[in-house]
Each structure stands twice: as structure tokens, then as C-alpha cells.
Image 1 (cartoon, rainbow, N blue to C red):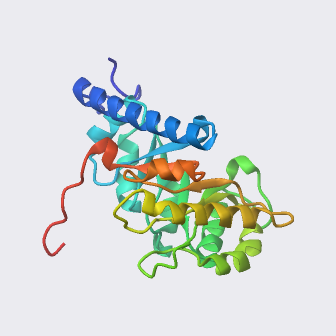
Image 2 (spheres, rainbow, N blue to C red):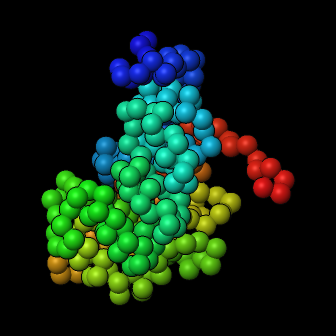
Image 3 (spheres, rainbow, N blue to C red):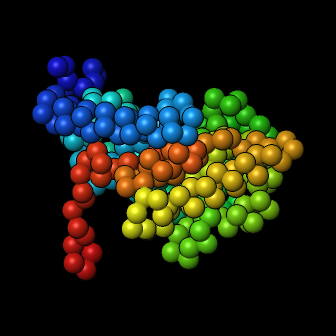
Length: 262
């Protein structure tokens, strides 16, 4: 097995045992996605696996990339910014909340921002994308130079979760669609903590119905992507139409418990 990267010697060859473990985990997940897609009459290739690499060190993440987990998800902007230069060959999704003061760094680091939860944040990202990428200050831009984003919806009306209220999203969507430096790929949600995967189904069905309703509007520019489902319930999410699943524990194992007081 060859080492990662050709422009630097700092990337050591990944541990073959670690690569094999991640490859086996990925294959199990892909098989589960395929089975769920078959039950729903869907094409499994329409589902993207985002390997959630939060708190996982760059050495392990590089091994996961070699194993085929090339789309990675990070919850924190700074952790992604620190890790991305150490992990070549990956596409990066921001899947955690984005504070406005971190928006510029997010644009610089991430290929996709999945957690746009307000018109104000969308407008700020549009301005930053234009500045960072040398684009005109207004109007549509070359689609290839837009930032791909998903709009986070709180379909459960859960006060503990971020995201647009569905009615607010319907109200603000036209204004967001006018932001020509953003590609509105679709919707994202963070489900409730539930005891069984089946109990998460209403959340996923609600996001799918919201997407269908919003995309049925004349002239809609909202894409069909649905980012929903994590390690414990992604099969149900695929059955309900997920095109992106965010899986961490099933690949990297359980995260260490937070330190007391931290």
C-alpha cells in the first residue's frame, strides 16, 4: 500500500489493520443502505455516505479515506480547518451549527455547509462567498463557483434543536433563492433522540414532505437533497428518502465521553 499524498512526506502510510476495519465497516453500511433502498424502490447509488469524523484524529481519518470514506463530516469549523490539510483526497461537509463569526472560515474550508438555519446566515454566506471567490457583488454566478448548502429544518418543533421552523422556511425561501452565490442543494434535519430507529420515521417523513411542498413552488431553486439519519437510524432515513446519511459511530466507534465539567 502506498502512502497518502505526493507533495509531502508528512503523511505516513495508514495502518493496514485500521484500513481493513474501516473498509469492513463501510461495506456493512453500504449493504444496509442498499437493502433499505431496495425496500423503498430506490437506487442505492443516490445515497451519499458522510463519515462523521468529529473528534477522530487525522491519522485515523486518513485510513478511513483510503478505505473509501471520502466524504467527511465535521461538527466544528475549527476542527475541520485543522484536520482538512492533514487529510488529502476528501470532501468536507460542515454538519454542526455555524456561528456567523465562523462563516468566513467555513467557506474557506468546507465544500458543503449543511446547517444554514436562517435567512441572515444565508445572506452572510452569500456575501462571503462572493468576497472569498472574487465574484460579482450581486446577481447569479457560475454554478461551479457557488457554495453548496443545505437548509436545516426543525420539523419536530424541538426547542433543543436548531433549524428553520417549516413555516418560516416557506416564508424566507424566495429571498434565499435570490442569493446567487449559493447552491441550494436541499434540506437537512437533526432528529430527536429516540429509543428505536422506527421512532425516528415521522421526522424523516416530515422532512421529505416539506421538501416536496417547497420544491413544488413555481420557479423553485431548492434541490432534492435530504440529509437525515445517523448511525442508529440511517436505514429508516433511506427508506423515507434520505440522499445523505451522516454516520460516525458505525465507522469510527463510540466517541470518548466528555470530561467532567467540560
